[in-house]
Image 1 (tube, one colour):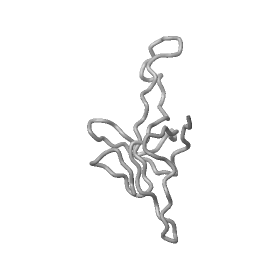
Image 2 (tube, rainbow, N blue to C red; image 1 turned 90 degrees about the vertical axis):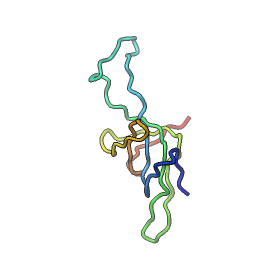
Image 3 (spheres, helix red, strand yellow; image 1 turned 30 degrees about the vertical axis):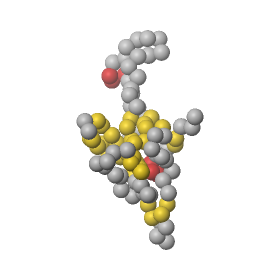
Length: 102
């Protein structure tokens, strides 16, 4: 059974919809950072997951992440998606590098 936070969007197969965390706008010393110096944010929160992919024998491979988990993304990749005036990214489950455990 697929799980999703949006009623209008359900990722297919092994896709994961994530929302990137906001970039740091101040340094640790309190200096405002210009947009070009902020760097790309590689952390995101999972907002929706597909049901998983099927292997060669036809069995469903479960997803490795769940809604609400914080994950580490690759620097490049993902498909940009605009939903409800917000920007999200769609990644394959295997492309996600790891998840943060509290």
